[in-house]
Image (cartoon, rainbow, N blue to C red):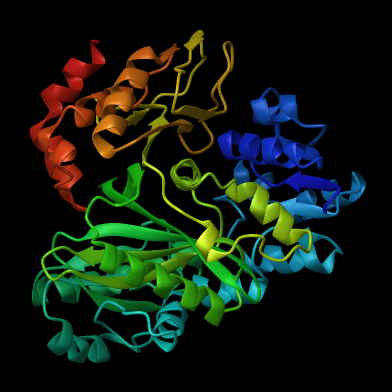
Amino acid sequence: MLKKLLIANRGEIAVRVIRAARDLGIRTVAVHSDADAEALHVLIADETVNIGPPAAKKSYLNVEAILKAAADTGCDAVHPGYGFLAENAAFSDAVTAAGMVFVGPSGDAIRLMGDKVAARSAAAAAGVPVVPGSTGRVAGIEEARHILTETGFPVMIKAAAGGGGRGIRIAGNLAEFEQAFPQAEAEALAAFGDGGLYMEKVIGQARHIEVQVLGDGTDAVHCYERECSLQRRRQKVWEEAPSMALSDRVRAELCASAVRLAREVGYSGAGTVEYLYDDAADRFYFIEMNTRIQVEHPVTEMITGIDLVAEMLRIAGGEKLRLRQSDIAVRGHAIEVRLNAEDPVNNFAPFPGTVTGLRLPGGPGVRFDSMLYAGYQVPPFYDSLLAKLIVHAEDRDGAITRLTRALGELQIDGLKTTKPLFLALADDPGVRAGAVHTRWLEGWLDAHAGAVAAAAQL
């Protein structure tokens, strides 16, 4: 078992990892920027190290400073959380080269699955269906025009090195395509240092469904699926498990395909295999693999009873998978909503500030993962995610009812948050019926601004 862990992150995920580590008897070291000196992860860790100024490039993305902090405090492992350096293959390699354990997959596995074209090829080799499109990186616009004869319109142009919903353009006709392709190249080069592109057919009104996997480098299991179809600007805002859309047959095929892929690439740690599901055709397609713990992992923990972060730490410490597939079962339904420091009535404008008062929800089936405490000053330099409210009940209707109750109990004074959005969504007939897809929320927001504004007055 690991003895001392540095958490190369901040916010609620740093708090989450620290708690899991301490439950296992592992001492923890929190790194922080100047802006985060009073952050919750700093206050609860065993040791802390200041690694630089507020700008992430000079602190949370500063590999040299992070490795020095780990060495100076005698750490034998580093957990990257999500975001920042979590899917940086060079960082994984650097941690290993420094004689420490990277809590996650190898640099080679991150490179393979981080390159979206290589990941598609690996998925195809594992017998996992992929979205129709280019078989590799597109050599140029002439080749791209040829691929259009197979995909048709609309078509998605995607950065090969992209992620998190960035580096994507959609063209609905040839004129839009001719304009979007060079723009996508330039955008990919600027954002990722790699202008490589690939193309995929747009699946109309698709659902976003992902499978949680755990691997030890040799074997792998799945912890069933999550549905993340409620998205704004390709960023997830509401996640739930299991999906309300899948038959038992499709669920079994989907989850088995994710395990095949994890085994194919020798995956170690917690990872997520992401798919589009076409309701009309009752078919699923691989889109990418995230080689880290996900923001939405708690809904899987709630329905399976498995502490995914603890399992990551055990695997990183040298243990083989403790779980057999037959040990893992789904119990009930869970929903997570992301509470951001944003004003949903004002086009989701960022709203950093001081938490002047805090009342947390509780009771059966309620979990609140956060970085908040009364008096905390939310800095303006980082992602706006403050907390995640997770609820669990016997069925989906019960989970939505419990979510509404918990949101009503929650009070965060001094900030505007996305709480009104979720109160309005939980009351919406379409959401209650599960009749959603990845582009549903943006249309709903255009038509239901009044409902969100009314919820903000509650």
